[in-house]
Length: 258
Image (tube, rainbow, N blue to C red; front, side):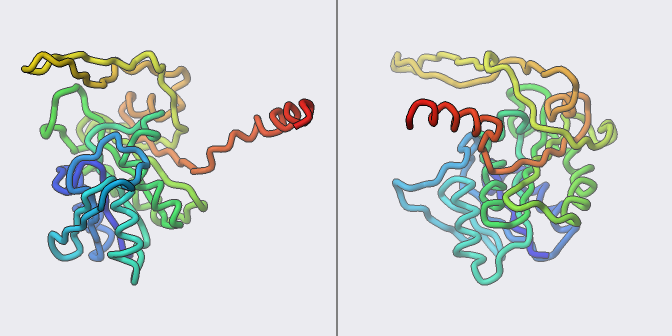
């Protein structure tokens, strides 16, 4: 099995080292193509207004001066074009990618790019307890549970244009309560927080931050599963069409003479 690893935290991130150890339990044909620097929040963006540079760091190990999507494209269409990966694993991200996070996440977007290319792809993220942990974020839950999550995922065929989003809770491996297959949740947008600061020259600048998580009822989503100490497994698909609205809009436009 040929496995491609990527992420959005950058090629030197701790989570990518964790993912490499996990991937080598499945194969010795492991490739790494990841952003040269952190690209958190890059979403499914492409670099179109400046050149993308590629650097070989070692055997089957490369970094790209671009986004996670750039990295996957570079891997599939250039580095590995003579032997495409069988699987793409993205992560392990420092921080959860739950609910609407998937629309911002470079980790999930790298897996989306793999899915668009017809390659089974999984995004993996490690939740942590509090802001400001930096490089001290523990990846114990991911280390202890990723193989148990990936083994059945890699054994089953994925539906076309789909990916799987996996999140590990912010607890030690011993305290993980199990694995739950759940749907994507949705948080309250009111949790957005903008922090104003002033630089030494007297000019204002801002940090985007997120307030406390507001959970949805029912404990049937990725938000609740991870908060309850479970590993969440959520299948996602790339068709964003809202089918229930199709007929209503057709009727609206037909009735208007359009």
